[in-house]
Length: 334
Image 1 (tube, rainbow, N blue to C red):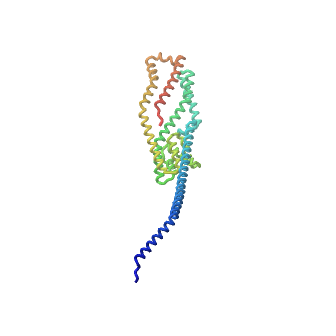
Image 2 (cartoon, rainbow, N blue to C red):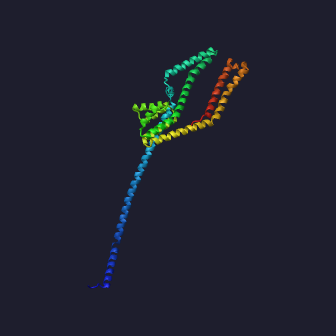
Image 3 (cartoon, rainbow, N blue to C red):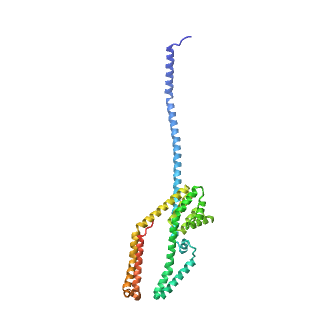
């Protein structure tokens, strides 16, 4: 075998290196241009992708904003309707709010009968005709409405006592897999009054074709409480936006119990002011009674003399104003 001369191998290597260097020098600008072009194309593609992502994110934000605004508008509209219904509630609605089967004719007959009985009793006891008419008017106009207001307040308090417990029952029913309408039927069938009757109205409205959110909103008419309005808002939000209804109702029950605790705390703190107001309001009557016991002829001039009648009327007006002011000072709305 013939050996290859090392000098030839070295020459071949140098020629190869020179050829490669020459080719790289000639093609360098083309390679760099191609790299820059590919880089610009990749940047354009990535920019288009980022723009698409930004646009999609912007669209999602806009959709969420529109959805949130729509929910806020619906909630405000619901609050306006409930406040308007409370302000414009007539005697017929107030009779429904008592929870008793009373009609308007029963209310008017009772008012007239009470006024007539008061008139005859006052007249037989020796009161003047004007005083008897005034007492009869007060008994027929003021006393029945006060009784209706008392019944409504008592029913509201009973409702607030039982409402959080009913919400807890609904939460457990929904967590166990029952739909909302079945949970409402459960409260309407096995709940405690007056929550039971109010939920029965909701179920009956649903059976008549009304949606559950509208039926729950309508419940505020027969039981005008902020807590009922909160419940209607939760149901409306869940119907529009979805979400975990059991968690929302559980949080609502917790909030209602905290509100009840706060009311009890405020009532305890304001008890001293209320006692002072009661003492101040009763003081004129106590003094008049003591004066009657010690000097009856001195105090009876107020009831026998026309000028005494005028003094009594003016005193009653000023006492009513003072009692009204003190009541507003010691009453706190939560």
